[in-house]
Length: 321
Image 1 (cartoon, rainbow, N blue to C red):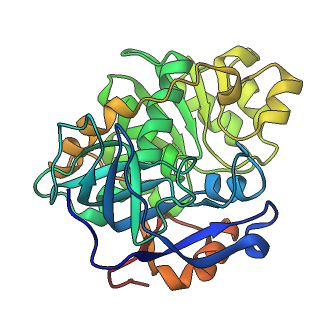
Image 2 (cartoon, rainbow, N blue to C red):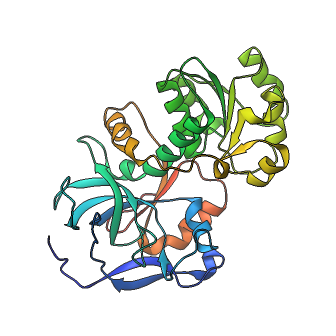
C-alpha cells in the first residue's frame, strides 16, 4: 500500500437532497482508505450519468454527505484486505463505492467496489465510459430474454445504453432494429443494425423493416410518452416490451421495466467488453470531457437532453470540448 502525498482531495458531493445544481458542491475532503475488498485509485476519468442527478434527489438515500460519479478509470493507489487480483500502479476500470465513503468517482481519488484491468490499447477515457452502459445493457437484454435468432427493436439507440445494447445484441446473435437520430445512424448501420428515425410513422416503419412484430422491444430512450407505440410495434403484447426509463407508463400499460426485473448487477461482464473495446470491436461514444472544476457546465449539458454520447470528468487531465 502507498499513501498519497497530500491528506485531502477535491470531490463533488452533496450534503442534502435536492436539485443537483442546488445541492452539489466541490469540496475538500479527506482521502479515503479502502476497506476490505475495496481499492483506492487515483482517478483519471469519471463518467457522468442521469443516475448521478437522481442520487442528489434522494434515490437510494443513505448517510450524507455522498458523492457522484459511478464509473471510473484510474491507477491503483492502495488495496484493502483480501484484494489479491490487482496491485499498486495497475490501471483499472469499474464502479465507485458511492455509498460508503462520503465521496465517489468525481474526485481526485476514489474507492472502487468492482473493477477489471484496463487492457493494453484501451484509452482511459474510453474505459471510463464503459461500466454503466455495458452493465445496464447486458442486464436489460438478459431480463428481456434476447437470444440468438431473435429480432429485437432497441428504441433510443443513440443513448449510451442503447448504443451499447445494439452492439451487445448483435454480438449475441440477435437481429437488431434501432431507432436513432442522424448523429449515430450510420455508425449503428455499420455494426449491422437496421436503423430508422423517430417521430411520425415510426410504428409502421419498424413493422415494415421487421416484416411483422419484432420478438422483443427494449426502450432505452428518456421517458417521452412513446411506450404505447412500442407496445403496438410488439403486436400489442406489453410483456414483450421492457423500458429502463418510463416506469410510470410501464406500470399503467402492463409493460416491463428495469425496476420490476432481476436487479442483480452484472459487473462480471466488464472485462469481456473492455477486451472487445481494446480490440476495436465495441465502443461507447464520448461526447465531451470536463475538468473537475467545470462540473456545473457538465450538469447543464447533461440536463439539456442534447447529449450525444458520454460526458466524462477528468480530475487530473486536460478536458476536450
